[in-house]
Length: 382
Image (tube, rainbow, N blue to C red; front, top):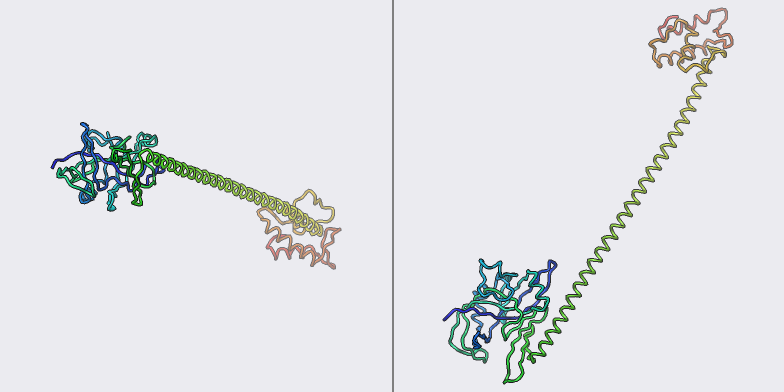
């Protein structure tokens, strides 16, 4: 049993371009049991079978994981030493069998390859190594010349046109379509389309191509609609963001305006209060001055020059009028104010002749008596 390299094709299901621009293909069928023709450069054709026990064996399914995607088949197997040269993407690690197909998800990440896919390069072809058992047989009513054993997938290629017998179109989330071209009894070339429901229909190849083209148009319309919806959503979000920013700015401006108004009102109230306080202080000072002058006149008389004297000097002069030995040096305001107030009490109690500027009492020296009272109260000298 010899080991050979083969290329095969199956259909893609559920593909989409993500936000980063990568093409992600979910659960893409890459192989199935059946009898398939393999043509060689000399024109000969060999019918080889993929039998269920072989294509769905654990080793074959596992071999589909983490394998490179290439743009066309390289002329050698892909390995670490040439990976950067050939790889344009990778399969994922979710290879599985559903009983009808071997499937695996994949991602195409190369921009040039993505551009070619958009321009119509829509077919996939798997490259694999297998041992060929040259014992002929029959599978599902179809004769085969040999069967493939120990199938190990090496890579999956994106090609312009696959081997006759299989065609894969990148339709996004389209129904699975596996195209088998064949001549029936020398008549027109027919194409068998397998839907994801499991049903198969057979059409003339030209009609099948039109169906595929219509699928492509529909899927492009869906893609365009999704892009427009995404764009509209982004525009709406941007509009909402701007509206929110404008509202925030307005709220901030109103808040600052209210704050400024409050500060201005506070300053206005403060100025008003200061003005009132000043007026009250002036009024209080005037009243105090008039009261002082009234009290001092009792001992200083009307002829005293009140206008040119301050409050302290008036009080000192009044005290000295009753006690000419009073020395105000070193005496603070509290002492002088208290002395003056006591002097008023004595003047009111003993009597004072405002016009003459002297104390009086029947046949006595009232002035001397009053000074004695000051000395007793403050300990001063006459």
